[in-house]
Image (cartoon, rainbow, N blue to C red; front, side):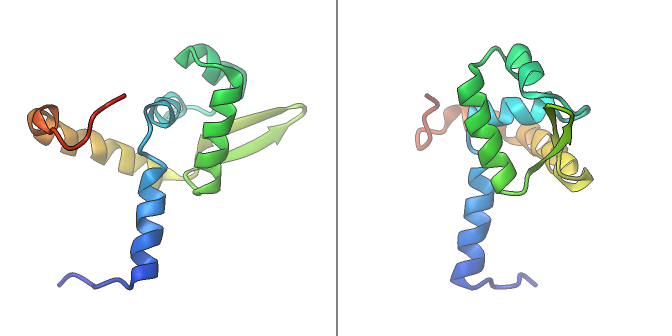
Length: 111
């Protein structure tokens, strides 16, 4: 039986899912999926600008998707927990099944 959520619960779920709804944020998550990294390491790995990456890190952190750990003058970013890693892995499995449908979808255009 599916539990019906109230409107506020649904709004929070949508807000959470929007954290995953950006190419740069997905690149960041894939970058730190197996190992924590600094902003500089992330910027170098995904070839982005530091200010843009920092904005996306703030979004991901604000949504509770990632965590930051201060060590000296550096902050190391990692996935918040194993459940987030499992969710990213599940996205990959589901995407594998629906990839051809996604490719044909006219409702969502990639920038």
